[in-house]
Image (cartoon, rainbow, N blue to C red):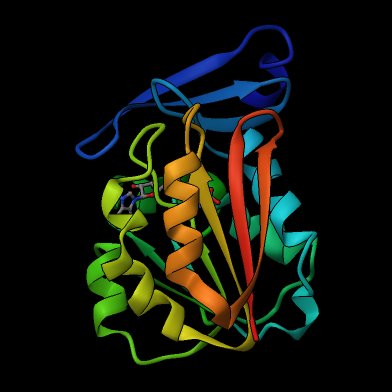
Length: 213
Ligand SMILES: C[S@@+](CC[C@H](N)C(=O)[O-])C[C@H]1O[C@@H](n2cnc3c(N)ncnc32)[C@H](O)[C@@H]1O
């Protein structure tokens, strides 16, 4: 019914998050998107941006994925539905409200192929011993990536957890001037990776994709 009515007018439900402020779940033209005050969080342009990134890598060779920033799980839906990804996913999300929205609103729940960790992404990787063929870093609070995820401390640990010939996709953000951040982050990943930078994907986000040599 909501889907049908949303073709006539958008229907919005507001949900409070301790981490991300007011979230808005909006049915619009038969589609349900999740937004924060200043940006789309899941199932909208963000999903298309991550789809663009996935189109640049060879998904069929991937067996284990680490997703930092589950949000409402739109990239999980893309991986499974569009790329027929059937491998394991470890998803990390700090916010229990988002984990709940992913499951209740989008049926992206923990299952035999996906473990969801309610944890801080940095703490998670500090304790992680697994190597991944794909690591997706999609960590935002509203429209900003917390600075710690641009740091050498974070990247030097993370890069060791990418398997040989594996990939990372880093959604670097949407601020106007990311030049200094980009230079630092690329240097921190260093020569172990073949790096490709995509600026203003869909007119907004900068993506860095790396393949481990
Ligand atoms: C843009 S959303 C992720 C969207 C998701 N990747 C998708 O495909 O729909 C960003 C997420 O990062 C999470 N996040 C922010 N800081 C975090 C942290 N320190 N540790 C874990 N998750 C964090 C936020 O709670 C939010 O759910």
